Image 1 (cartoon, rainbow, N blue to C red):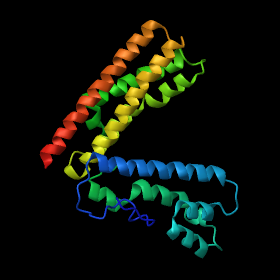
Image 2 (image 1 turned 120 degrees about the horizontal axis):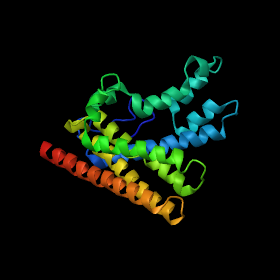
Image 3 (image 1 turned 120 degrees about the vertical axis):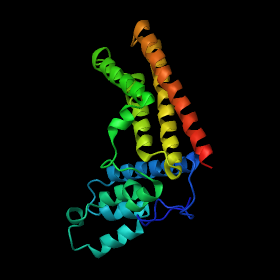
Length: 237
């Protein structure tokens, strides 16, 4: 996968007609994660630096933006053109990429559709129950296992919805699968966190068994859903 410092080219492969499978989409998502993490670290490091924008642009390898900042040095670029918007544009807002990948924007995506998807319904209902658990039984408790549970339990439903929004056409189905695989990983992390919470006595056996069994069903059904999507992808060829 070839990358470019130009925001319009960031999301394109050398062969624009190539159909990306789940692994190619995972590479793209991992690259986007790294760039997002690097951006966050740099923003935190240089937040109060007077030349923050130019420093971060150069560190990120955004030569096109660094040059723009140099040209606009006499203007208030942060007010005229919020440079963080360029980062967001580079990662997820390229209209050409959306069209090429078959991405369905939130403006046209009907959320009622995914809400009728059983695997999403199950994951979403589990998330609601988990948040209620956090707000009641775990509200005044602090532990890394609780934090791990809270940060992972809502991911499966979100990733299923995100994948659904990308669509089921061949040019975007691999991204759908890759999204769901991220949800599957989070579902596994949720179960691990529950085990840790039980071992530490943060939840009783009854609560543990209820949430572990339901969480396992979410994980297993999401795994089956991924297999079905993979089969659909294979049939497409």
